[in-house]
Image (cartoon, rainbow, N blue to C red; front, side, top):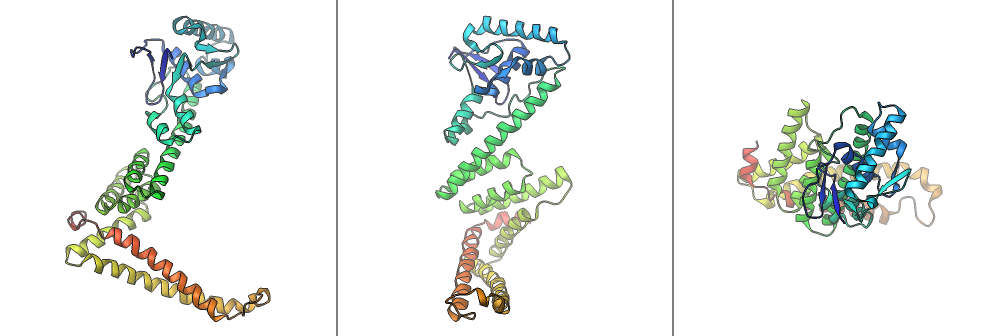
Length: 326
């Protein structure tokens, strides 16, 4: 590899010795477009439409020929492949875009995230080339979505593998991509809580709430606010003298009340509908006592565990932080 094109987080061409290659902006723009196109390449008409939309056909084609001649002369005859359909030769000009996409294709999401240095062509513009800007925006959105998907996969793998620290790292990076995204904010708060940092989860919830109010002039997403306030409530109770076990027990009791009401209503509805289902039941009596006893008990156990585990994690919140955020 003689040159490396860095198009994620800016745009510059680096020589093998490490120095930045000074070249025309349109040359860099053409190289970036071809890097994003990868093996698909771009034909001459596409390049002309992006880089010289206002020029006559003859002038635009002449300008493209001059640009291609200049690239081959300064970077090597083999830098570009093709006559009408043009592609970069990765053995001559490699790019972070190519490495990023190859890592994604191989399922090496950690490598892909490392290669992603920022939005495609961030801070790079061409005057009088709206078609170029539209194409850049499209590629930028595509690559950013792929980056977010890689982070999501890494975070999910961390959560499933019990690596709470890694999950927090990836969830935090996802939240930083869009600080106003309620789903990502909630996921980060849950990851922080799972990692034993309920205080951090509470702090992030408050930060999110303030940011939404400041940026959008609107109340924050209810799910995020509810999650933050629940943890704050637990911290305040412990600051007033309640033990962690008492707080957890209270949460479980509240959950049991809701579970009991739901089970009673569910059993009642089942008994009411049993006549409609009677003709479709085989080998089971419409009012089979075992079924009506075991099913609610199983659901109750699952619900209790679902209340207990998050409550136990959330009870680790620092009471002082909870009081300061009140």
